[in-house]
Length: 426
Image (tube, rainbow, N blue to C red; front, side):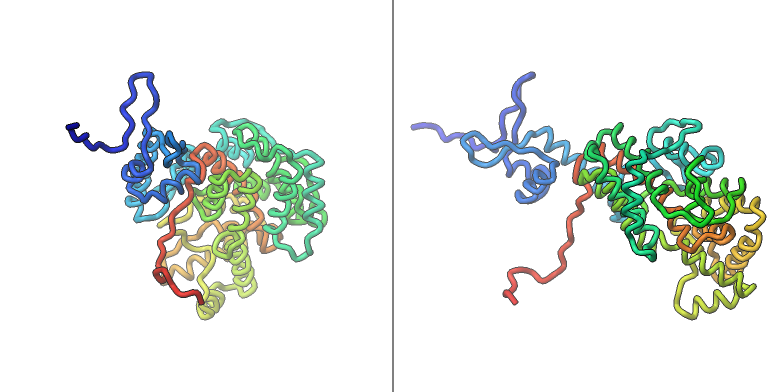
């Protein structure tokens, strides 16, 4: 009589050195990952695991090393999520915010913006190298295509509408847009940003297509003559706003890049989120508030009217800075050197002092941008334009970083709270 065989799991034998890889069944893989078998195949569809048909065609097998690596990643991300109170946490080497300061690749962002142009700060963010005197220019054909698309929009189109259309048009003109290598994406960045600026309509007497990007952008924002102090303030504002960790628009960019959308599409995703009233439009609200205070000559009745209408006061407070927003502090210091900014600066200080009687809120960068746009004769939407152009460089940096991660990792699972199935068909 034959002895009963010892029952062992369906695990392949440990390979001998240099031998075949160890394979796991679907059941073993699910047990190791702590998920259901259906979830294992979801990992395959997202590109996080690869499978192979088992000999005889009975089920799939998975490389044990890949499964164990995925299990380790899941444990790390779960621990990071727990440490942040369940909020999404993403590894990044780009921006650090702590103790009322922020840093680009470990360097104080305020000092970087004070010493270098927007273009130089952008290159630092993309490559970790400073390139003194770097300029960003776009091919005439790309600018022409983007400009035609933007000019076809109705006159009342918002700045973000124009920038988004310009990005789409520039993408259509670029046959290499699906090349996601670092070199190709950097080439896209260096063309896309000046294209966005060049495609914007110029103000009367404000046309300027030479000099720094700030100089070229100036002519799209105001018809006032560009003096050195005002241009420096605009250039520094661009450099200060280039990135700010995982703001809502930046997260949208990383989600798009995680799905391997090309850089133009990733930037378009960021522009779509930026247009929300809780994100990019804040400086426009501060601009209008500042004009009201200047007209009244006193912040008290204006603040009272805002609060009576149930509106929060724009340009004050920031969830990441218990104290003053360092970007606002740096920009206010530069605006003090702009003679025509004096009245707007006084109005901004009046707003802060008036609200501080009951709520200790500090000025944020939106109020500082409003002082810049009001004093330089720019429209209320100018702050949104400055923000969007500046942040495009940061979005590209985050897209580049995300292209180096495993694809589709930005795929949280829904926590279903609806009625349990099966439910009758209505």
